[in-house]
Length: 117
Length: 115
Image (cartoon, rainbow over all chains, first blue to last red; front, side, top):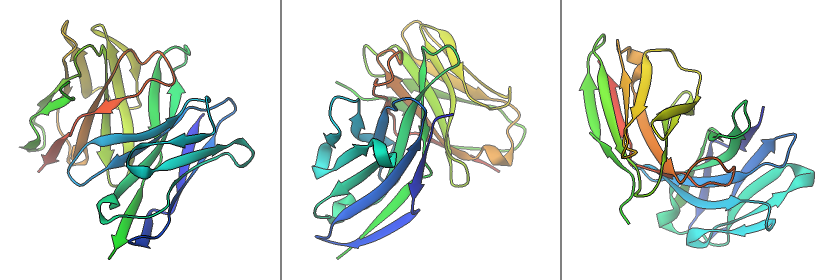
């Protein structure tokens, strides 16, 4: 079964520092991967998604992620953290049902990002 | 274009009661999915509806049910509430959910507390 693993439930960085949030996938077929962000008391907002068109995917708010098949990874990065980036981040993979035609998202456990002034 | 809306935003119920949550998808979206989010289990898929039919279902007991109306609005119902049902329930809509790359757009969620 396809799944994702997020390494590190909590990451703390200083404002202006590099943000690196790790996600590894487990899949026997090319996965379709997503990163979502959740601010306190809000739903999930899509940051970016990998659809096999390009291995380096640029998203909103300066975030990007690189799909590396050899490492089965899809890590999320941002060159310079802002205080407003403090939130919980979820990596997800799109998984087909048994019939192969309807899809659902399977999420990692999430990584809470803290940005220190 | 308005986003996904969920009502109510907060609910407090007692054990044994039942509850109905509502979700209005983005205009034009025909697929509605429901997820449960808890600190212990994270985000888990409940079920997905398309054109008033349940197409996909997660591993939850039969106390959890849902339906979709002809205007694509969806409701989910939880009967005989248990303490463990306390969670944030998220609704997501997408165009059709028949492509792996379809983006799901999430509502703000309904926070259910069971006492």
